[in-house]
Image (cartoon, rainbow, N blue to C red; front, side, top):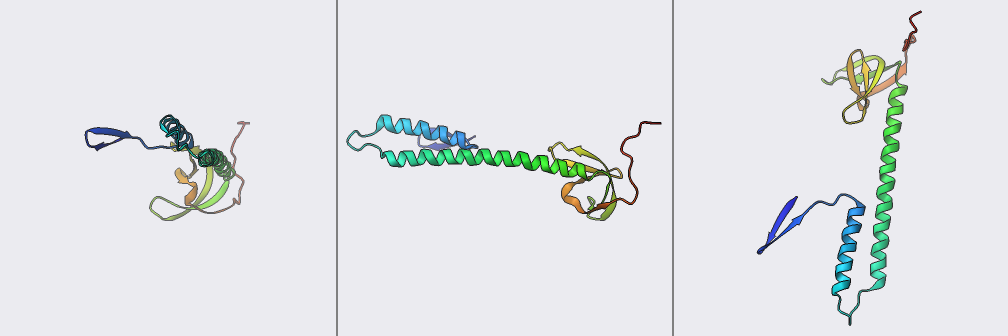
Length: 144
């Protein structure tokens, strides 16, 4: 929170993160304006309704963006899982090109999938190429 000082009064300013917060702040401001408006010069209804419409549209866009992010996350995890048993070329942490077979997918602390290749943990964006392996990899064995 940032505190700005103007004269003898201090005003706390917090960052606004969502359309819902913006809309709530607008409603508080609108109510205050209506309570203190000059009866001889009332507020323009058209302008007020257009602002409310804009806030509603902003809230819908924010919701669509959140849903898209969830879909993108699911697609990324699905793609990572589809790479199990495939041979990939990738850049290691030193920037050297390596090749290996994906044996496992783990989810990192940031919620993003990581590929395990010969003990190395690889981010999806480090993958340069993917191809089928020459020999099938055994993922599960019943021990018989």
